[in-house]
Amino acid sequence: MQHATVKSYFWKGARAGAPFLFMAVPFAMLFGVLAAEAGFTLIQTMTFSISVFAGAAQFTALHLMQEQAPTVIVLISSLAVNLRVAMYSATLTPYLGGAPLWQRACAAYLVVDQSFALSIAQYESDRQMNGPQRLAYFFGTCSLIAPAWYGATLVGALVGTQIPDYLALDFIFPIAFLGIVAPMLRTLPHVIAAGTASVVALAAGGLPFNLGLIVAGTCGMMAGAQAEVMMARTKAGK
Amino acid sequence: MMPELDHTAIWIVIIGMALGSFALRFLFIGLVGDRPLPPWFLRHLRYTAVAIIPALVVPLAIWPEATGGQMDPARLSAATVTVAVGMLFRNALAGMASGAGVLMALLYLGF
Image (cartoon, rainbow over all chains, first blue to last red; front, top):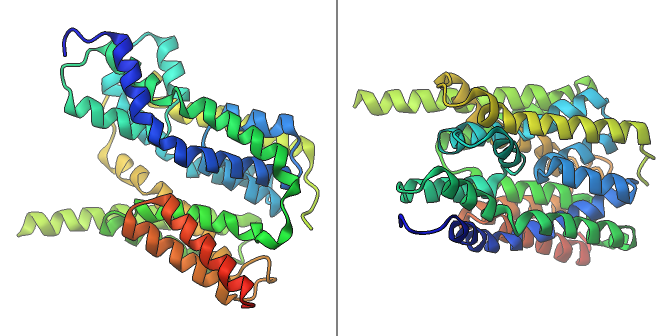
């Protein structure tokens, strides 16, 4: 492994990332379609997808804007959906922290679910990798997904307004999000976090400015974290 | 059907989210370096996505906008199937496809 070139790690990352195209392409197209339906111009849709590059947060912002939520609430809620990338960034730091600042800045832009999951798995299984090899692998995992994300958004935005109403597009948003979150419910604390947040969201639906979302999200996070602590204590006690 | 969006507001959201998302991603990798973070902080970060996303969509599944907030058997079944299949197969696309299929079928049948 010592002799493997940096370039070969880039391609290795690209190959590992390829299957995620099946997820990213329909998702980005859907975003393009919904943004066009909501009245975004082509330039706005593309700027959004390229500069933000975070599917779930983009969908959240789009939805809240259509609900006429105040801009501050739109920003706080969408960035809260994206808080997990901060955790990914924290986890990747020991592996990529040695690279020059501009390379770290480029890597930061590309921190998404797929690049994080693939890279951490690779770094943990191949401890011999040096800094440049790690960075090359990381960039490789995004080399197909990022252009596909932009391209598919464009296609979706172009066909967007031509989708007939009987396809019940109104419900694509909940289905897409429930689909994303279901596989994330891996442990009991995750289920508790999701359950608490759902119940509080239903109870707090009447709060002004869509504040119920932030209250419910915060309660869910606290419930999940608390459940984790209690489970760890129970385990340690036995 | 949808209210017209204000283009200034759209640009503010786009720019705010572009800067905010980059800041979230850059915070640790760029600025914090390898200084350790408090465990309670990381513990809460772990549950952000699984808390915020259900808080956002569960009310929509129970009181859909398209039916004016009336509970709708087709949409509720579609949501339930999406979560069940997504959890069972640990696969987001399988969940979405099943949910969309159930919704289309039930709406076609007149539910």
